Image (cartoon, rainbow over all chains, first blue to last red; front, side, top):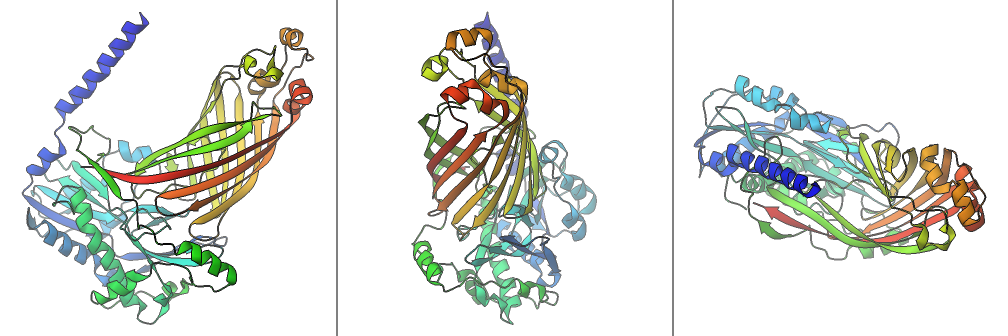
Amino acid sequence: MRRIAVLWIGFAIATAVLGAAAAFETRASRLQAIKTVGIVSAIGDEMSLTQAGLTGLGNSAQSVSISAWGLDELIVQQTTRLLAGRYRVQPVTYRRAAFAAIRDSVVTPVNLLRSDPFKELVRSDITPQGLDAYIVITRARSKLGNGRSVEGVGFAEYRTLLANYGLIHALYEVRLIEGKSFDVIEKRAAAPLDNTGTVRIGGPSGQVDDTFDVPAANERLRAAIADLITRSLPVTLGDMHLIDGQ
Amino acid sequence: MLGLRTTTIDQASKAGPGPVMKHFDEAALRLKVNARRTTALLAALGAVVTIPQPASAQTAVTLPAPPFELPMLPSPSGNWTVMVGIGGQYMPDFVGSKNGKFMPIPIFAIRRSGSIDQFRGPRDSASIALLDVGNFRAGPAFKYVASRKADKYAELTGLGDVKAAYELGGFVEYYPVDWLRLRSELRQGIGGHTGVVADISADVIVPLIQRLTISAGPRFTWKSTKATAPYFGVDATQALASGLARYDAKGGAHSVGFGSQISYRIDPQWEVHAYVEYEKLLGDAADSPLVKLRGSSNQTTVGIGASYSFDFRIR
């Protein structure tokens, strides 16, 4: 009797899974239907300054404006260049601040259950409508150390007992949103590059040295962040099958 | 000198300047990176950390894309990191025993590449953080408590078996600063015991250098009567069969202790760790005739382990 019950449960699960398989289009078939895309980027107006590791009490992250760096323009430009071989990229207008203001819920299951917040914004905020898909690039979040979170573009100092280490990071995620239904076809956070060392951070980052505090540091900092973005974008878009894998 | 990889900024600056930055103020400069300290100790450590290493876990295999995707669940495509390893733990034969045994412990974890493996204490239950606001995390927790077979150890003769217990509950974790973790778990037992268990611990986490971290801190456990009695109580039948006095074990403060661990990341793939956890049984657990006459209230667990991480990719 028990064996029969187990068999029935197994059959029901198999039926449900196969039914789901038949009911939902594969990502590949949805990608094939895309011909025209618009690109939205909203990661680059603020840079966080964080300390992690052996820090004092009451140490909180600061942020500074880097809107003049033009990182979002750089991202749109780079993404357009990378996608141009396969898609017709059309310029779009949008309120960058509205896209940058959206944050994931701190309650993880809510992010899985609720409708993606960018879906509605793409529908209401982007001009022109009617493209096959929209690529939305916004800041992502990662742990640094144990009790710190960092997001987007930033400069962090990781303090240990015997030495301190500097890190720059450009954490972002890419959504591919279908232009008619506004379903999120794919969402992917940019992965770490090869130079992340052993101070772990969940996205493109690199260690920096103590020549950072020279007067020209700002320009070099901007160039270093741009380098992280430029090197990680092809990998991320490749992982999403939007361009040939890198 | 420490073996920092310092090429990023220089290489990037050669790539060409960007727009003029008007808003980046001196706040950034206060976070001065000061990575070179020249003490004799540091020189010795530097010799260790400048060992050439691969930059990151290499992608070993690529698996084909799944034939379909389920709604609401994220696509499995992308890079994943698998950690496999083996550890060993010398621990008491059973809680309250004065003798120990060595147990091999397999290590296995899988996560998205780039996601961070957070600090974990050896006594932590398996848990998932459903709420994560950076320095505060909370979620469900689960612990498996192995069965206690009376015929395996002479001290337990006549006391009968205690079935395996499954403890389900939740945890909260708070980092007032990055180097101090306060954690509490509350779990309800099912099976071998049906009581409530509460664990409270604090860990000071000190990164000596990037790769080498030590941690240590106090622990405290409270157990209800239903969680204590199956392991430390002696009923009339058991008293007759074991020769121990009848004992009615009540709940309350169960143990207080101290734990410490050290972990060293040899390179992005290999990591080794070791730990020691000491626990002093308290209250009715410590006063049980099983512990007083045949066991010990001092419980020590020592463990070591090594793990290897590698990446694989799903198209």
